[in-house]
Every structure is written in C-alpha cells, then in structure tokens.
Length: 150
Length: 150
Image (tube, rainbow over all chains, first blue to last red; front, side, top):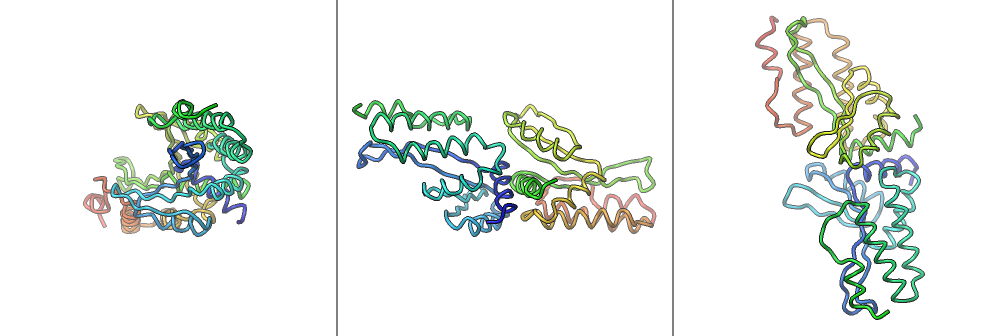
C-alpha cells in the first residue's frame, strides 16, 4: 500500500476509529481466557461506501450496518490486526500509544510460556482499556487470576 | 506540507470532520447576506492535543472546548478554507464531492457580478447542505431571494 493511503487510513482511524483488546472466556482454552484484538472504523451508514473502500484496501475484516444508522468495519483476526498496526505505526498520531502497546501485547502473546506470563498480558489489556478511557465493566486480569493456577 | 501529512489530515477529516457552508445575514452587505464556509475537526476534549497538532500544521483557525466534552478545531476564513480544500483535494475520499463543490462555490463567489449570480451561489450552498444530510432549518436561497431585487 502506498504511503499516502496508509497515512489516510491512519488519519481516519485517529479521527473516528478505535483499537481495543478484550479478555474473553474460552472454557476449552488452556488459560480459560483468550485475548481478542480489534481495529474498528465507524461511519454513518449513508457513507458506508468509504468502509467498503477501506476493506478493499486492507483486504480482510467485515462490515456491519447497525440499526442505529451507524456502520462499522472491524478487523478481529490477530494476525491481521498485528499486520495493520505495523503498517499504520509510522502514520498514526493520536493513537500512537495504542499501536505501540498493541504490538507489545502481540509480542508478549507470541512468547508466553506460563500462566503467569498470560496474567501479565491481561494486565497490559487492562492498561489498554485505560488509555481508551473505557469504563465498560468487562473481564480484567483479576477475573483471570481467580481461575488460573499460578 | 508533506503528502503523508495531507493524506493524514484528509483521512481525519473524512473520519470525523466536516465541511460546511452557511448563508448568514449581513444587513450592511450589498446582498444583505454573506456566504460563510467552515472546515471543522472534532475530538473528545481528552484527546484535544491532536487538534493542537492539526492547528499547528494548518497554521490558522481556532480551537474550542465545549461543555459536552467535545472539542473542535474550526477554520472559517474563506481564503484559508479555500487553500486547505485545494491542498486536501487529492487525498479526500468520502468528502470528495464536498471539496469539489466547495471550490466551485469559491470560484463563483470570486466571479459574481450581480444579485442573480449571488442567488445562484446560494442555491449551491443549499445543495451543499443536502450532501451533508443537514436538516437544520437555516437560511436558504429562498430567504435570500425574498430580500434581493433581481
């Protein structure tokens, strides 16, 4: 992708997009929980063509049209989220900390060896929620720590 | 400005900014009304540093912090709005029609010779409101036409 295309996408993401990480329950997983990452772009459904364009450029993810009149284009596959964060890193401004912390989480995930390592990653996910000013009541590292033998 | 900076600003504007034209009453003006143009960027006040950065890049306009927790960076000086539209034109996607219609309005304004010309420009401003899906009840070309001798 051309540098002006990447810079445009970075600007669009900074303007009205979001990067977030979540801890989701996975009873069948070794650590009982999974780290899910997402990059989302939002737009009035009347302008959703721009989301189609973004999807064509990025080549993955899916678009949803909500009843509220807002559409979103979301990428959740970890490999794809990581790839996009790397590509956008030189161009994002507002979300520079998000991109850096996100890439750090991916790095830690790839090198985790123990439940303790996983718990440390969950703490980074909690930190990610803070930089997103997220107040949503969700699963935190404390929830995970209660169900994991260390 | 570097092309990736311009592309970033275009992406930010497409994501969550707006371009708009208004007809405002000016009893002391020859045509009794003035065409006012604006480019605005919005952001949560907690992230308003990015608006400062935009202002530094663009070099004009002002930032307001609203009580709603939203800040905006707005450029209203016609000469500056026109200059920025020209710079962003190669990079905007969602607002391409806005930029083109905006530049067309500026061109018409610079060449207006009669009240009839001014009224035609007011019709273009009405069209601009349509492409913005604006439902605000404001002054339209009809309002202007009632007070202008043709």
